[in-house]
Amino acid sequence: MTDRLDPARLDELWDFSNPAASAQRFRDEKAEGTARAELQTQLARALGLAGDTSGADAVLDAITSGEPVVRIRVALERGRLFNSAGRPAEALPVFSEALDSAEAAGEDFLAVDAAHMLAIADEEHSGEWAARGIQMVAASTDARTKRWAIALHNNLGWLHHDAGLFEEALAEFELAAEAATTHGSAQQQQWAREAIAEALQSLGRSTAPPQ
Image (tube, rainbow, N blue to C red; front, side, top):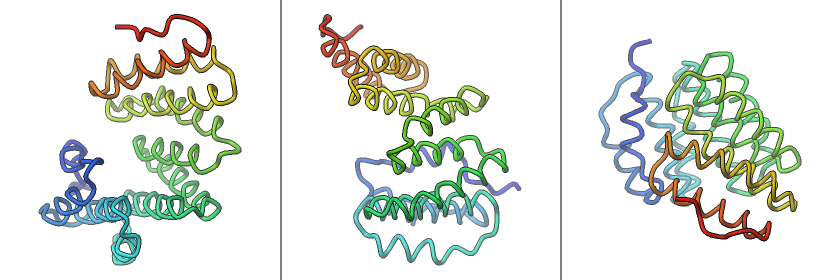
């Protein structure tokens, strides 16, 4: 397969703080074949984030590509739409399908994305899904996939913190900060420092974020 969507280009097109603008960029981007179908899944995601659920559904319904990566992306975006609509019971099997298909296809980034979404949608087993995602990140050699360690450790840290397990939370926040230093943005590094400060405060220790 030679017409895949370039991950670096995808990152350039996305601005999660402005999904409407991202949607327009996805519409304007020139691509063919598999890459075009992948772009359509991201258009659907942007529309969903902008509150246009019916538009997002219509875009996904129109995708006809049978390529594994496209099917995985469609499943992920279907699941996100279900979960955002407050229908996690419908999202879970779709995310599970995405995870299984991504692992079978060797799509590390998308497999971890699916595990991350399962950790969000399946509250009863959130910690287990986050831990599985972290294991997949550790096993992956893909630099872009390594970035998932930031969100996964952060989410697991807050899960521990909400349960009153402050030492465990601090350990996860420190791992998130380490990943953010290596793979993340300045904003992610700041959020990691703030999470560490809150865990320290909960433990009755210094609240000054590490520099």
